[in-house]
Image (tube, rainbow, N blue to C red; front, side):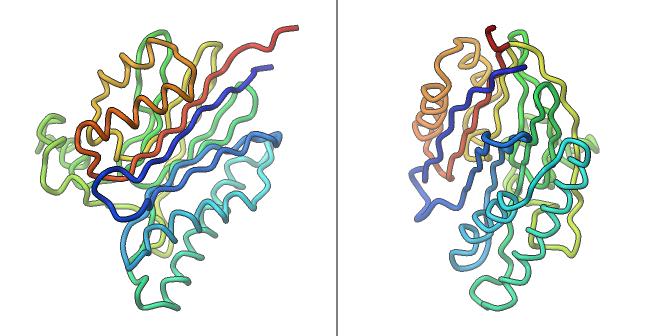
Length: 243
């Protein structure tokens, strides 16, 4: 059995009037839930959309035999709740949220992803992005119209192609993971990755500091670069339990 350790921090940043990010760390159940969400749109709508999504997901029971179905059902219910809430309040019209959700069953993980928040796997001193952004610039990179370097500074880099609350049925991408001892996972919103590059993130993770300290240093680095967005970081490490 693995022992799961976590560290997490969310911060308003330096430019936004409120924090529209949300995160979930539920590790007391058989299937552990880790998630980040980045809300947008409407008068205070982003905050409501991200919080509502994770509230709905937290209320669902996940089971190892039906994990994919359970996660999909919870996400679709969250999507419906966000859309219905926006219909009842004109000030919330157009609100939505990204979602990157991880379900953990000992050595196995399943990721459900909508939007441009990210999940990274750090293994054997190498950082790998597991999720792909559902964004306009990411699609342009895949089509060869932009380089990754150009995409990082493109004026439309925040335009999303998928988010919860915008369509009747979002396109949820799933990724399967199998964990090894020493693996480290990073879930984060684009308030981090928009300002701190993957090479810098990797250099921080190599130091293998206590996870809460690492989360704090990542947030501080993003704020030192201008903190133009809300920043949320969740870190998870996997270690074999000692007999």
